[in-house]
Amino acid sequence: MLKFTYIANLGILGMFAVPPALQGTGSFGLEKALEETVTALDDLTQTQATITAGDYAAVDELLASTESPVANPQESTAIKNKLRDEVSRLQMALDTLESDYVLPPVTVESVGATQPKRTTGLTDSQRSEIGGILVPVPGGKQTSEILTEEGTASFERAGFTASYARHGRAYYRAGRYEEGIALLRHAPENDAESMYWRARCLERTNKLNEAVAAYTKVIENPSAGSLADRAKDDRGFIEWKIAFSSKVEDQVERRMTNER
Image (cartoon, rainbow, N blue to C red):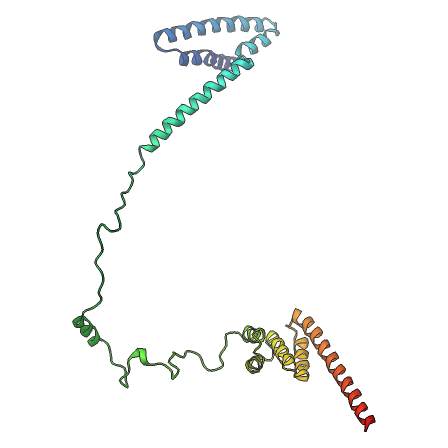
């Protein structure tokens, strides 16, 4: 209990003594702070004696004496304005301090001040020295002249394509159906997308029976996915077209037979 009382008294002493000491300047401020501290200690001693005697109403008095006074609206506004001015002053000081570390501007020279030396390439003697290091190509041809008959370097075999499906689709959209059929003929049988575009090209060239067979392979391919549904619709339309054309041909043939 005594230890708690000592700590409480020490804390209360700090609340009364430290702020006045910070506010004052010189011996006058320190003397005033000491006087206020002595007065506060006397009040606390009387309050402690009252509490020890059993008058617990003095607790409210103790709390009131240790709480900071509540300022009215005008005083609060004045304090806020003072704080804003202080913050603005500190911000100006910070900006001034940071501006001291800014590097000086770099002066850009004009374009025509000094022209760089123009590179003219190698001299004849330098070229001959470098040419002596190179190994001659068999046949008397330079490396740049080893090209195909068309004059371009050939890196892939004839008929090579990076993607049969995309290449065939490009042929189809360009209206080059025969080239698409010729290309997609070499595509793997299990490539559903390539087979689908082959069927589309066959349909455009009016090779309907071959197109139906190609659509059927797409439908039966387990990896076709959504292409299988599209192939079903396209195949159904071609089958209807074949049946309708056959029916029309039969009617025309019958009419011609009757006329005879």
